[in-house]
Length: 409
Picture 1 (cartoon, rainbow, N blue to C red):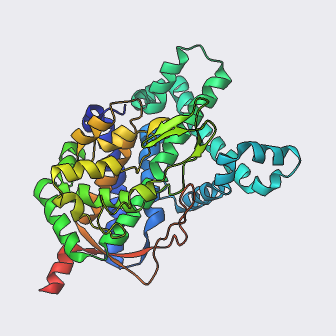
Picture 2 (picture 1 turned 90 degrees about the vertical axis):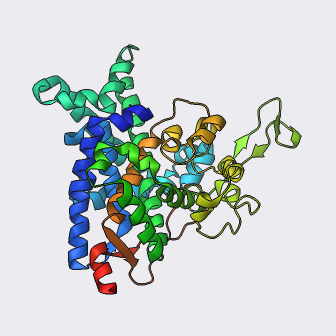
C-alpha cells in the first residue's frame, strides 16, 4: 500500500487526489482568487491533508470532509490542539504523570486526557463504519477492498487476535497515520507558502517549472512527473530543514553495557543522551547561513555537498522512533540514491504518500495562482518536543497568475 510503485500507479489515490485537491480544494482557490478574501492558510492546508489521509485509509466515502465542513473541522482541530497539552511531561515522564493520576492529581492533564479520548473514539468510529459497511453492504463496498484499513485488518485477522484487541490495534495504527498525515503536512506547506509568498520571482520560476512538465490532469494521471521537478523538491527540502516540526531533543538512556556514539567511546549505562534536528540542520559547515531559507542550496550544491547535506538532514528522525513512513517520503523527494544508501528499505513507508500529497497541493496552487502575505501575521515555532505554532494565523491573498501578469504589463 505504501510502496513507491503502488503509490505512483494507484488508481484509488489518483481518484482521491482528483476529487479532493483538483476539485474541492481548487474550487476554493478559485473562489479566494475571485473574491480577494484573506485566507487563513494553516487550517485550510491541514483540512486538505486530513481529507486525503482518511480517504486513503478508509476509502473516499468514509473519510472526513474538512475542506467543506468547516464546523466539524473546527471542533476536531481544536480537540487535536488540546490533546497535545502537556505532551512533553506525558511522553518523557510517563511514570510521574501516572502517579499524579493515582494520587488524584490527574486534573493537571485532564484537558489532554479528555481530548485524547474524544479523538480515539472518533477514529474508532471511522474504523467501525468501514468494517460494518464491508460486512452488511458488500454491494456498495467494493472500493473498501483497496483501502489501508481493510488490507491491514485482513492481515491481522490471520493472527487470531481477540476482537477487542484487534479493533484497538487497528484504531491505534490508523490514528498514527492520520496524525502523521495532517499534523506535519499542513504546517510544512503553510511555512513554505509563507516563505514563497515573500518571493514573487521564485513563484514565477516554480510556475515555469510546473508548466513545463505538468497539467492539471497529469498531476493525477502521472504522479511520476512530480519527482522530476528540482525547484519543487528544493523548496520543500529547505522548508523541512529550517522548519523541523519536532524541535525538542529526543532523550534516550544508554543500555546496560554503555554505548559508543561517534567519538564518545565509553558512555556509561543509564546516561541520558539526545539529538535535535534543529541543531543538526543548523550546522554552518554543512548549511552555510543556516538561519536563512535558501532553496538554491539544494539546486547549486555539488554531488559531494548534497550527500553531506542529506547526511545531516533529520526532518523525519531515524531508527525505531523515526517518523512513520519515512522512506515513502524520501523516495518521493530529491536524491533518492543517497537516501537509499544511508537508510535501507524498512517497514516505515507511509510518509511518501504524505510528501507526494504535499507536492501535488503545492503544484496545484502555484501552477495557476500567486500568493502574497496579508498584514503582519506569521507562523512562529516554539522549542517544544512536538512543535506548537505560537501564532497560527497566516493570512494569504490568492490571485490568478494570468491576472497578475496582465496588471504588470
